[in-house]
Image (cartoon, rainbow, N blue to C red):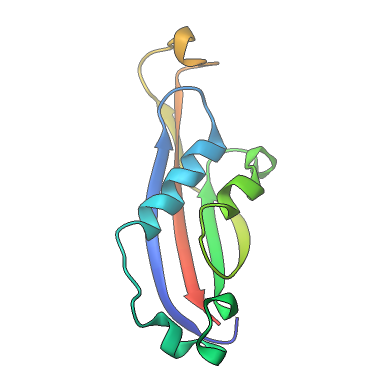
Length: 119
């Protein structure tokens, strides 16, 4: 990325089911769904959303191979998207195991996302 225009941040969790992809998607949604970028095209080369570059950084509390990158990338509506996964986030007891929610244990996963937008 040549130039970062702004960074959006968010958190997401999966309370039951221990699905780190679901928590990652929710973190990205939290980062981008409360923002509007009406003037972004004016900063992009050729004023095209296709020239937007989006770097998603996810701090996850579980093995990075558990994140389905394609599902997370699908949450970004424009541009060229990359994902970087780093150690972080949180795995903490939800206080209960609910088999009907596909719980494997009592952990809930919390993921932190930083979404860098630029070109």
